[in-house]
Length: 178
Image (cartoon, rainbow, N blue to C red; front, side, top):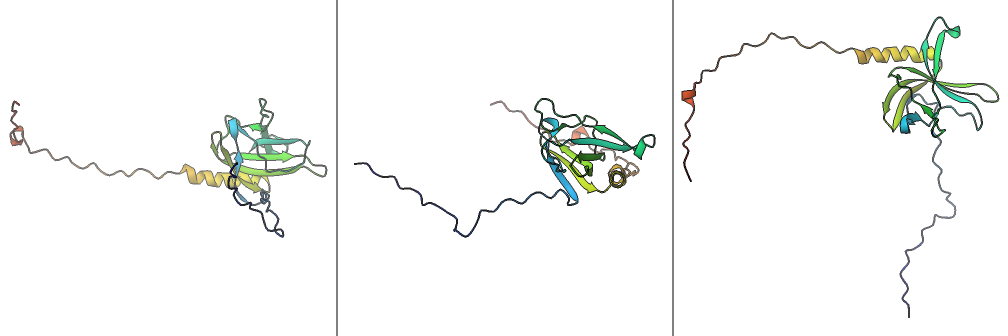
């Protein structure tokens, strides 16, 4: 005769309670947003355009010689996996970023400031800003706070007092043989 193994009691949710779905992330909330960045490429985008739409990531800077006053360097897609965009080697804290996408009605833009990058984990971006100029002005203000370091205190060196001990002041140790 076989013995039955005791089964743990089944846990079920009450019939009138549906499982809660995690809330969708709100990219429109101003703040510091963390984008997943495995293998030196970001795979999250703060713009939602729908499947099959063209999306891009670019670094921007003011340039009066360009129409619109802003130059842009597009990030390259990650060619190995086909997922995400390669983080440029010269990307620096305080750079203005543009996340863009085409929709059937109008283009979508999300402007932010590059905050930090944790290798193979996170790229942190502050935003969104309504225009690249607003992001640039805030980046310059934040960089000014980071750039300033107070000077070192320059105290006159304290005079060193000569040692008044001599070799005769040391206690003598006697070596004993075991």
